[in-house]
Length: 315
Image (cartoon, rainbow, N blue to C red; front, side):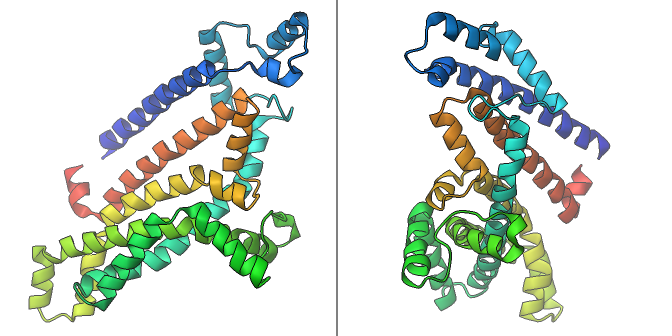
């Protein structure tokens, strides 16, 4: 077990290093000069050269990469060209919006999709199964930003029940902050719930045909007991895989929804940094997203060992 964890950790570190190198190289190849964007087209060559030297853009690529990587490991992510503040503070500030938004969305997705997928599998071919498949098809097909616009029109413009956008901050109070995040979370959760419903249904159907399930039925256990105590726990491996991927997608892929609701989240920060050619912010945010995906995959791998004795034995 320790050898397995050591190999996984080593693979995680190596993957992060390779990803960081790719991110830095791609960002350096993007067209446009941050110094020219900051000073405008009327700046003199001497002024541009001075600013490029101040930002370290005149140094060799490999040296800039090593300096950036050393700063990442030491917690010094550099200063934003646009905002003039440490990037670490910007990321932490925006995470205070994006992370709760992703957590609420994933909770809503699980609360809807898991019972629906399990019931659809238990009543295969019936009305619940058909309704679950229709819900899954529609929710996957409908874009999240379009759902966000519909929610704004219905609950904000027409009914006046929810704020149309913006984020008041957690210091204002828990209820106003959650109200500002509820509609964006629903818009993000709907497509994920459709995917998770399909995965849960397929996983439960596959597990129903296992020998232990037939043995439990033969021993006289009720259908609901077999379903929820034996089949569903053994069907969690593919469900956990999708949940890990969905959480990282919700954190990194909320750019459109955050822009629709004017939320000061991490996705909106990445969009603003891209439009303003703020390279250091782009690098750090993209590396954070990539690191989150890699770490979540590692956590999902560990969860397999926790819920599946067969995997622990194999390890």
